[in-house]
Amino acid sequence: MSLFIEDSFWIFLVMTVVFGGGASFLAGRALARGWKPVSQVVLAMIPMGAAFRFLHYALFEGELTSLHYFITDTLVLLLAALLGYQLTKASKMVSQYPWLYDRAGPLSWKSKS
Image 1: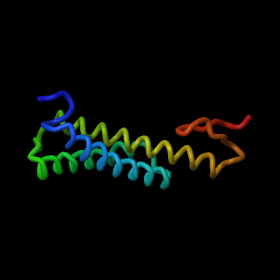
Image 2: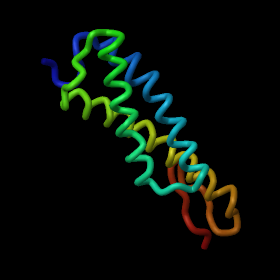
Image 3: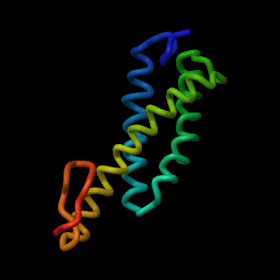
């Protein structure tokens, strides 16, 4: 058993990181656009992690019931979702409240003095 991935690094990279990360990034953006709390991002990634664990099982004969791989997949998806969420939220704060906030980087904003 490898530390993070199953049999093939490439399957993990393409399925979980590229496809799953892309879908999670977009889900994070959608939740930020709806002004949802970050807790909903975390909760939304749990079933998505289970879905991608199932895809690994169904398409590539991966281990379905491995808690270790489920946590690994879910953490990768959660990181992508949180990135999409924070990028979108920072952009919304600066664009919707330009008299209150300036951009302080791609992921944050600061109050105007």
